[in-house]
View 1 (cartoon, helix red, strand yellow):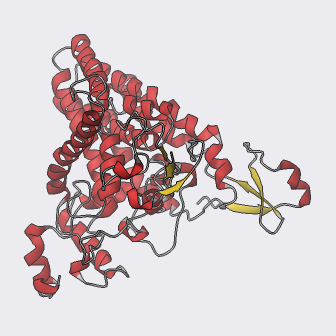
View 2 (cartoon, helix red, strand yellow):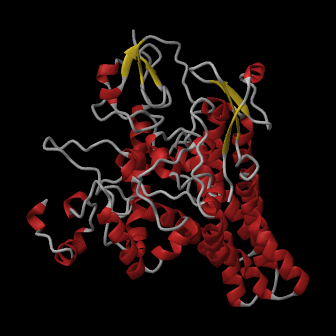
Length: 62
Length: 417
């Protein structure tokens, strides 16, 4: 399972964990997110901008 | 005028690396030299904290002298002192050095100021309502006091704006709480997830169009923004399998708190609270409409041949470096940097050269906007002179109802687009 990060604010979408607050259950594939998916934290970067990689889910700008 | 300074320190300052304090910040540059920086605005941000207490000043002077005119004082502060201070104190172009910014962002002092304001907004509304509900005021003094309360709660939206952009649960919760004061709980969803995504596009209810007066804008913006927030929250709740009417609805959470506060005031101070709170709420919303109106007037993100809208660029926001407005509003007028980096904290928002610039700080710009004929005279010229527009109305977010008139006025064929 991979993690995809917002290059602007560091929000991480971890496929294993999903994002409960946003309504994406654990195991949600990043590919399956809607095409108009915008970063839930900054909303100025979109699905195609997200950078794949592995991480600990830590968000910058805390 | 406050001028910032970067002080080059000797090698001995290396020992202070990473120490952030009231005495400033020290960082190492890539060339190995140390840089020391004292934030010249550090203590001045306290103005943002104390400003919401402005109604107390008028109430206190009214209590002391029995002259109702003193209740007008906060309106005078907003509409006369504010623009005057902006013109007297002028602009501040100072930016913290990039190497220092991470320390400033981490420094808890700045965010604590935003936390401190939250209870003050509740206090301010309650005290003002108490005075309006218990004194034998003339109708005009009562109305003024309600307007003063609304003017002040407009600042609660600004506080909610700063808090709502952050990732921490505490700050987001405080944003919801402070937005309950002006009954604008949907704002942080609408603004973060809606406005920032759609800014400077014709469909954004929170971006003003060229030729659209602030009054027509507000009528489009207030319901449009609420609808967008509701749609975004409904979509999120549907994904979670929850009803939109559940306690998970973040808009309803804040609105419930608003209901408790306003119902409480009604029960304690009686029916007078109905007109008082109506005026208060609408005038608080009006403050946000004023900010939204001036922030993106006429600016347009272009759509390419494939129908893709260009990314929000620095030239898609109007800016102002007037220090007084910025100190009262948490650097809101450094708006291009805010849209480029929505999570950047107020203390580190930057000025850039060659950005679309408002003729005055927000205090003065609002006044200008309230006189549409004068606003158009000043702003349409500025808008068309922008380097990315160069007089081409096809590159402007234009009010469809005024399109024909504006194309004729500026002698362009409407099929230019």
